[in-house]
Length: 236
Image (cartoon, rainbow, N blue to C red):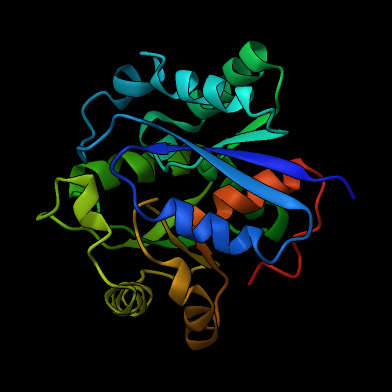
């Protein structure tokens, strides 16, 4: 099988996406992963579409990955939940029109997995402030998915600081989140691509008896699916 190159767009302040994507690429034959960054440091619900979607920041990073002749490009950021999933779809069309390369996002990959596994209710672990979570929940609801429990933080406004929250703390937050859900969720998502949930996703799956989908990992899984790769052995 010929080598397939995956291009990942990520925020400049992110320290989680690269190690996780490299880890996954290391267990998938004939795949390499390549990265491009754009400037993003704040955690805010204030018009992120204008800040880096409509400004062309993400598209500019994607064009740089096209120079590496990647076979698929992924925006591995969870901002689709903030701007709305249709804006993510529009971004993918813009990337493909500009570069000729298929594109996806971590949020769209999660939505696709929800559809494949008949998820309707989900619990959500995030490090976001309450106003951002309200927006994310509304966009998931508009897509037909109900968030029955979510975590939030009011003390983190810097994207870099999110990665300082340990996987062990993410694990505790997840257990508390599911225990406090208004209804039993069909799945748990760890939603935030500078959140270190991938390292405890499998453990949480076993402890909670639920599928657990980490948005960083699903950026990579979505890209692999776009390449036609079988990811069944990778998905918990």
